[in-house]
Amino acid sequence: MELFKLTAHELHDKLVARETSSTEITRAIFDRIEKVEGQVQSYLTLTKDLAFEQAAAVDAALAKGEAISPLAGIPGALKDNLCTTGIRTSCASKMLEHFVPPYNATVVEKLAAEKAVFIGKVNMDEFAMGSSCENSAYQLTRNPWDLSVVPGGSSGGSAASVAACEAIWSLGSDTGGSIRQPASFTGTVGLKPTYGRVSRYGLVAFASSLDQIGPITRDVTDCALVMNAIAGHDHRDSTSVPGETPDFTKALGQNVKGLKIGLPTEYFGAGLDPQIDTVLQKAIRQLQDMGAEVVECSLPHTEYALSAYYLIATAEASSNLARYDGVGFGHRGAGDNIVDMYKRTRTEGFGAEVKRRIMLGTYALSSGYYDAYYLKAMKVRTLIKQDFDKAFEQVDVLLTPTAPTVAFKIGGIVDPLSMYLQDVCTIPINLAGVPALSMPCGFVNGLPVGMQLIGKPLDEMTLLRVAHAFEQQNDYHKQFAPLGGI
Image 1 (spheres, rainbow, N blue to C red):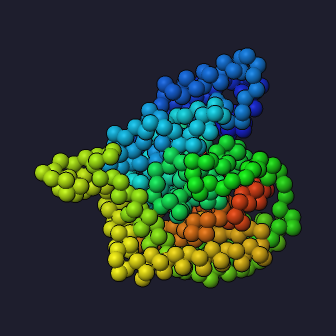
Image 2: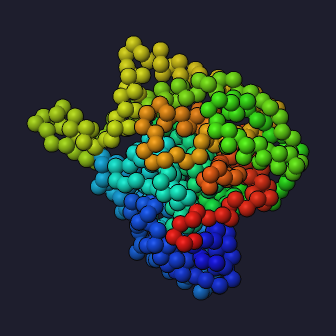
Image 3: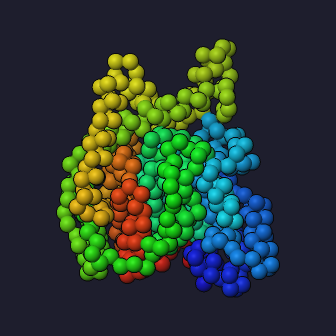
């Protein structure tokens, strides 16, 4: 089998056995990129020289008989909102077209310490605002399963690069579903960790109380390996959770007997594609046959989650993006005076969706409306968190669809509200701060369907346990997008 089709753990075994080298693996990935990137367009920046330099260092360590980490020498991609020293970090925005950070994000530092290989920075919705990767200021990323449909967003480039075998692993960020929904659309595994489990230091902020970094991988084992590398307390992030981090790979290889899986009724009603429901019901029956107990439960405030999210997230975006004024860094527009310069900078630098969310957030925070909108949304957020707390008193894991539909046609959704509804199954999880994982569980009309598993705070282990047990009974993760003669 071609090297680019293997998982990180399979490649690690080959490296340790000296059956291949990191340089050969990296070359295979770049050859694959050369073959299919013109169709997929997942990368904004390729770091070829750096990648081969990192690969050569791992090969040299192996030649000396040194032990290597599970991700050493394994090529991956970074979402373009993660700061990288000396490498452009644009957030897919004209505002940061020429921004080159002077420091690395903590997750980048951690992966570099593991001797992982960085292939490049991948495309996204501008400033992580979108559900289709159509909001990038630079290019349109396509879904490797069908080039006429979207890869999801905002981490569309992260998911597409893995699904197209242009990266073995990738990192994305998730504010309202931006790791899980693209994972669902591309047949990959995507994990949004508990808020605070992974440091946000060096992640360009969208909504600081919601943002979280996580992995997108080919299978659950690779997901656990990347989590081992990036999780942990960081004193530079005040919201980082202190304490020991478990070895996530210890969750693998266990069964689901005795676990109680809850099905929230609010997620299986109107708006869910009946064909997706059919696929999910088959997966649920399979988990029952494996020994899990499945029960119905309720998260009664789910219907208010979308409204609350689009007040809280936009308010925080308005505040976070106020820094892009043409003075400190980023794009600067010409103007006769400072007010004119501010206006031109932000008019030229931001795309339509970013402007829409800034205006929504600014309105929600404005005098006379703060209590009516932002404060009320925060109270609803508390109710949603309490719903999850109550549900987890009865069950170990919740199971829902990741998205109400499979990947939709490029240009198929033009109404912003209809686009926002794409995140209806993922947004409540960010509001509650709990972990959730999306994994492939079947296909509808040749396109992947994602199953979302939701866990208790800091209980990624149970999510990985259930996901890995389900994965071992199926071969969805072993199927490849029909791209480039694969």
